[in-house]
Image (cartoon, rainbow, N blue to C red; front, side, top):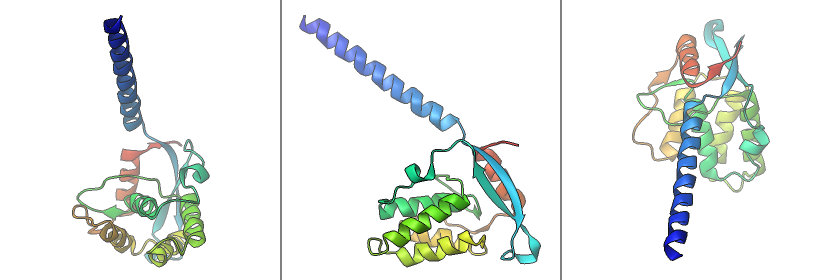
Length: 176
């Protein structure tokens, strides 16, 4: 009887492990669906276009970014969004840089200003991004990267509109 129970527990454990592996494999292979809009912003030099992503299948931003986010989660979100616009040899973590996400993060940081050691840095970055000013997004990336003690993947410039589109197409499913 003990042998039977041991075999059943082992079989169930293996099934659970395989299920978890299958879920994360699917999740890592599937891409979020987004739409791309190009707009011209007064904050962009020479009338260059700004790419705006609109998510079509993501979870509600209030669930993804709760009001009680840790400071590390704030850094991770800003860092992950900056990857869409910066040139770096290595990039880990990709979060679509959307107006909705920027606005939500700004609200969270403002509400928890006394809780976050680097609130003023986050607010400076999010204020610029909220105004479609990405003229120093590489500097913004590196500020957060430094706060995270980054050693690999320092931003070395800003992607052109064409490079940014290619990055988005590589990491997200584009809906027309």
